[in-house]
Image 1 (cartoon, rainbow, N blue to C red):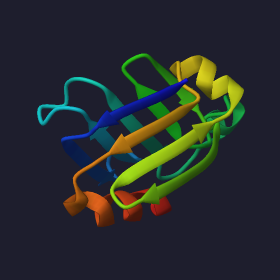
Image 2: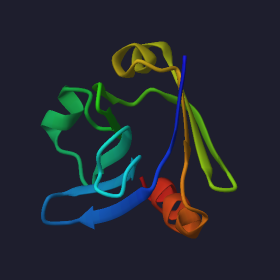
Image 3: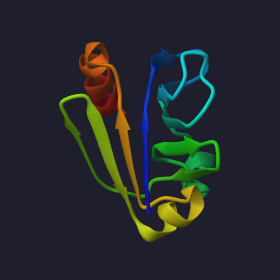
Length: 115
């Protein structure tokens, strides 16, 4: 099943104090509605590795999953992410297609390459 939505809001943050980088694509400007977050610790510790959390994390309003991306690409101002079976089960979709404002293309692409 494919989850598709138009993101009116895009946020990209690298916070050394919290040891995290994340990209958030939200359906509405106030962050409500459908949402896809891609998070990653800036540095992993032994506990992260032991728990299998030494990867990026996908978060939606319906679930959370570490890893699981089979492929991703950006075509114009649309992000497409294809998920493996475990991620699809946890997040309720085997693929995400999120259209975002064209003015955010450079931000989205730059953040995905650094995650």
